[in-house]
Length: 128
Image (tube, rainbow, N blue to C red):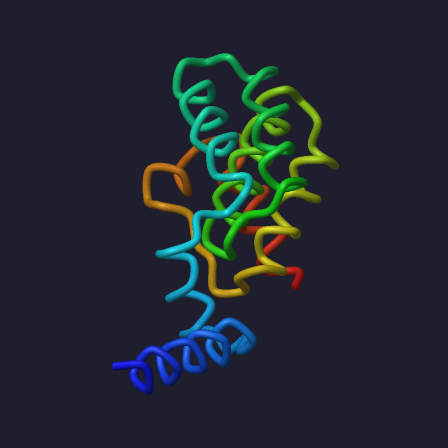
């Protein structure tokens, strides 16, 4: 029994030290990121049209720390907010940050068809 506990502890320690993508994804399931609550709040505010507070929470979530997938989500929504607020440079910057985390990132069909940020996203992605 004691040996099994020791082996389990050593295995977990080794996994914690490993930074490969599968292990990071596995760890994200069991260890919520510190910025997770702020991300959830920011996305809810975004859906409700409260863009100023949403942007604050999304940026706060990024500052506190998020997993890779959640970083992409936060940057993408920040880009949307900047685009609809006529801040094209910041919109492009946020799309670049999202693509830096996940170069294969694409917008959902409804998002890609948006008349403001759809063309900006395609231009940023093409320019990478």
